[in-house]
Picture 1 (cartoon, helix red, strand yellow):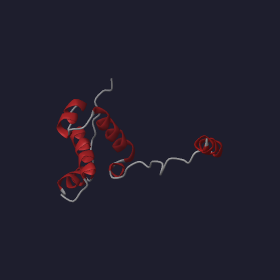
Picture 2 (cartoon, helix red, strand yellow):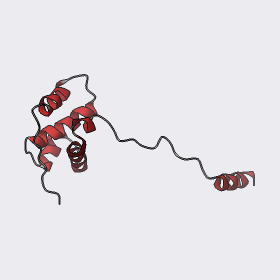
Picture 3 (cartoon, helix red, strand yellow):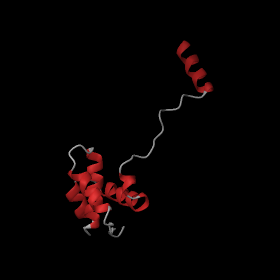
Picture 4 (cartoon, helix red, strand yellow):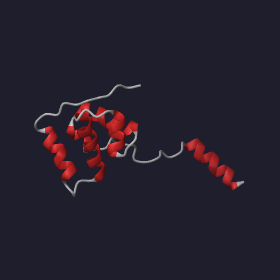
Length: 102
């Protein structure tokens, strides 16, 4: 089991995260990420952060880790993912065509 993670936010980070939460034009995914960090900085445990933010334990851990590694900028971007599914290899495509022609 993982022990509670707490943050000490700098004088510049806390107002920036609070502004993200308060701004009505901020995407909701950024709002709940910022709330997770703010609640963690207020020394709430993982379970309390889960209940208050309405997210899963793994989501709390993920955004706590991301903030610890990358700071506030890490909360505002998603990790990249592959653009699409790779096409089948030529031998697989040939076998599919052969099966379809039977």
